[in-house]
Image (tube, rainbow, N blue to C red):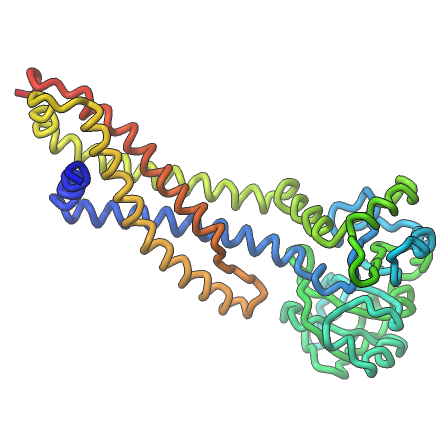
Length: 381
């Protein structure tokens, strides 16, 4: 308690310096939280649509990096595993980019399209669960449009008529899904309309195979059985597995993941430098006092603990306002993007950033304490 009192008294001796130190730590904490928040939003938006697929297992080509760059494989792979114990239904899914013409500006823009058999319950969105939706999707040149699509695609009102790859397209309905970082907007259409827009694309080549299992069946066990039956031109993933597959691609194989990771590192270094400068200045100003304590018989270990406790106090004092500010910025970001960039806090991130903050300040304390430990009373006085 005496050491803590000394550490606290040192910090409170120069209150202006203390406020600068707290602000510096808080600033670094905010930067770390924001970079981690955007990274988490990246993963969420890049994979959240998998939660809206009515499937427990997914079949994709080994050459597929993520769903928007998928490689087609033979549809008969679904027939090969349709009789596996526990399989309730298999459903082919087609996906590809096509050009969508803004009916107001006349500008065409790439949009991501899904094609499926309207009789298959491939999606969980309530807008597609309605009986009328199946009949609407079966109409020629009719599509459903994602309400999360960017405004550059034009009006999303039902009945709007425009062009898709120079063919007439009518918006027959809307839904909420999101295209992640790979697509600014999405469409859903019947498999027949899909091959019309993307001719000469055949229906016997699919991009994703959706497998719905019977209730109570273990997806992992069925997946292992399918892997032993299928050839090497297709991989089998559970829903958590396919989400991890796409997440690793965005984090490890694209510049986006690197930028946010580097942002965390830079924020850590900035905070460490700020704390080091504050602690070093404090030690320099109180060097006669530290030398006097050494002359009185206090060991270097005692002085070391005082400086380390100052660092921990700075970490805690800076972390709390940084956390509060980050929560506010998370809310503003989510509100400003209308929920399309879901920046959300979680307990794991709170603990992780607190640990980083403590490490950051303690490292700065370890570097700056050398001057106090090596202080020689004879030289100072």
